[in-house]
Image (cartoon, rainbow, N blue to C red):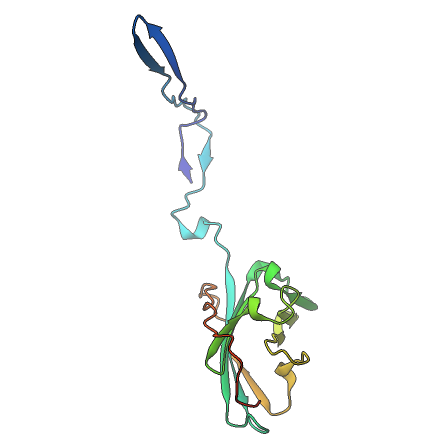
Length: 180
């Protein structure tokens, strides 16, 4: 803690006083009054800062069968640790601080690109463990690809030291000619 000797600061007041043909401005200068018990947290110390702590994950989807066999898609997501309690089923949305990014056919998509935004995307956890990411950017019927047969999802261990920087959308939003 940093001890501060400031309890009240009086504002600067400017008032014109007319003296003959000259206008003089007078000012009241801020004044600090000592108070020995006032203290504020030292925000230069990271242990005392109010910055949120995040859990960040990377994931890879490898398609092993079907028209997309051999394709691989990468992404990441994160959420503030204090947005979950780690018990039972919990569902996070962007309003909870959840962020997601995915490279799909060379374009990077974020939460705002989900076809049902802002209700989706959603991250489902059970007892604090990631169970499913529901993030859909296609115009066709929404499906939970996380559980598709032959779509192998590899999820990294949580990185609790990373910040929650998600790549911006660089998609062209051009129609794709490749079938999926």
